[in-house]
Each structure stands twice: as C-alpha cells, then as structure tokens.
Length: 455
Image (cartoon, rainbow, N blue to C red; front, top):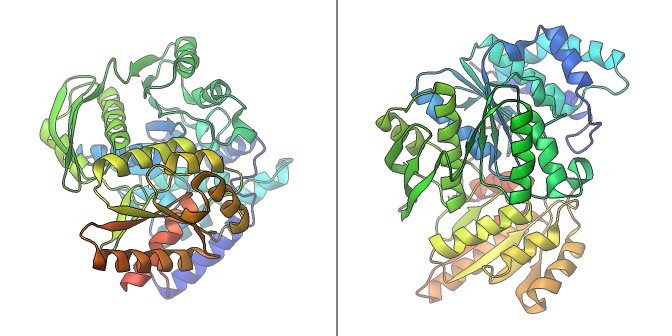
C-alpha cells in the first residue's frame, strides 16, 4: 500500500531524473543505453517484445495492443512517452501505471548503475534513457509475458532499440522533430525503419509512396516479413456509433466483425487495424472474435479526442503537428454536430505552428491562443500573431495562461448554449503537455482530483 512517505520519495526520484538531459536534447547514440542494459544484465531480452515507431498514433496503438494481449491472458508491460500528468504513466504493468512503491524499488535497483555509466560515457544518461531502463527492469522483475515498447524519437538510435523485437510496427510517418530526424520525410522514414530486426514480422500502416519505398527496402535488407495496411490487413467497414465507432477489420488471418471501439476518428480505426495485425503476427493464428471485441471495447486513450466535460462539452486532443491536427479537424467535422467550436491552442515553440493552425482553421469558429507551462512553450504574443495571419483578427483571442483560456472558453460556450438551440464546444489542443495540463485543470473545475494527485 502506498504511504505519504512513498509519494515524498517518488517526488525526489522524479527531481533526480529531471536533472538529466531532457527528451528534447539528444546526442544520437545507443552507446549509453547499451552499456547500461549490459550492466543490468540485459533485462529487455528476458521477454518477447513488440516495438512501435512512427510519427502519429504510437501511444494509442500500444494501448490497443496491450488490451488485446491482456484478453489473451498475457501479463503485459507497456512503455510509452511522453506522459500526460504523471511520469508513472510511462511504465504500465497489466494496463495500469506502475505504482509508486514499484517505481521506488525499481529506481533503487538501477540508481548505482546510472552513476556507473555516467562516469564512463562522454555524456551522462538522459532522462529518456533512464526511464527506458526503468521500464525494462520493472518488466523483468514483474515479470511480464510480453513487452510493448513505444520508441521515443526516431528509431535507429532511439534508446528503446536495444530490444530484440519479434514484431515491429510503423505507424503513419510525417514531418516532426526534423532537427534530429532529417529534413525530408524519406530521411525521417529511414531513421524510423531502424527498428526493423532481422527475420521479424513488420506491420506497416499506409504511407506516402516515397516512405513506403524506404520501409520496404529495409524490410528486404533484413529478410523480414511485411504486413501492409490495405494489402494484408485493412479496415473493411467503419460506422459512427454513440461514443465511438463500429468496425469490421480484415486481419492477417481472417475477418473480425461487430467491433465497438470507444474512440472517435477514422485514424483510430486504422490504429485498431494495425494493432490487431501486430498481435495476429505475433500469435500466428486468427484470434477469437469475442476476445477481440472485448479487448477493443475496453480501450481508452487519454488525451486523444477525449471528452473531459459535458455542459459545456470540453474535448482535449494531443495533436502537435499538421498530421495530427488534420485528423482532429476531420473528426470534428464528420463525427460531431457542434454549432460552433471554441478552439484553444497552446503549442511548443519548435513545432510547425503554421501547419497546425492551417489544418484547424476550417473547423474552429473562434480561437483562443495561450501558453502552457512548459519552458519550451511558444510565447502567447508570437502565437497570437501567427494565428491572426491565418484566422483573421476578428476570430482570435489571447489569454496569458492555459487555465484562464479554458475558463474563458467554457464560460463563453455556456452563455452561447443558453440562448442557442445548437451546441457549442471547447476543443483544446497543440501539445501533449497542453493535453495533460488541460486534464488536470478541467478535472479541478469539475470538482474531482487526478488519480495521480499526491496531496
């Protein structure tokens, strides 16, 4: 049972981890994580793994794969990033975040090894590398039957790429993190293709032709077995349903009908088909239909087109690049019936802000620009100037902080809904950081606290 003292220790651990290089500062190399894992006894090799890379959809796909394996009776370990509200979310065991006492025990197991490798490398272990090692050790100690590992950035030199994955998954690839991954989508694809292992199974979401060529070349080089969306597996049918959608999926080994997925958006249906193909490839057989239905019905994806509040409706989405914003806009237009939408955008300064705003403009009636609490946040005055250039001055408002922006938009929507027959909604987006902070803010407005609160 977790004690108040455990939370205090957990805070100290998080502060120690945050003193390391942040995820946004990289020295592309696997030397440090390889040396650390060797010192720890290669825990990542003690269980089979499914490794997921791509630009968008990785975390949701990982959660779907996790749910399918748990229905199959596997003990699962899932590593994803970044987190929304608590760093414990990154390491999930059997569908739940690692408990504080579990994180404390795992950190104590590896702390001396972190110091050892720091002393032997030109650059110390980074925050992400330390979290990756913590996940590997936690999964070995639990122990898990399967590790579901999401790559952080890229793939070839990503810290997670020390796994020997039986199945590699490549979700849709777009332009993001170009300062590290390359200036073209083909260069980015080359980096992400680095997770493909010799003679492994490779699940490929649909990609632009130039990207597909890069990935296929890597598959051939590694004598891997490819399964392609639209060829070996696909979404056969998708119908909008209350709270989500009904799907028919063509899997690698057969068809699955009457699947209820409690998530919105055509992109989530694609994620479901990719996840199913990954588990089928691992199992080598068609899965039980009812098991698949139960697994998808139980899926959630916090911060991804998540309805946080009713009256007024508040939706949060972690879209942080043009590809994600386009999926969000398409879903708002085609699967919701709002009379008007108040958009709130807070974004990090190193993102393609103009591309994100242009994709949102057709579906946002009024836009509130603001700033999240990250040190990397784009200053609100600069974001305001960029938004005016795309939306026009009459449609853009400015609030200095995310909380005041949410409060303002919710109040305005409430007033509009009181005098209108239609329904207006608030949609908050722009960053995973924004999504996590929005969940906390709206939860407090609604009068209940986070499951991760420690006070």
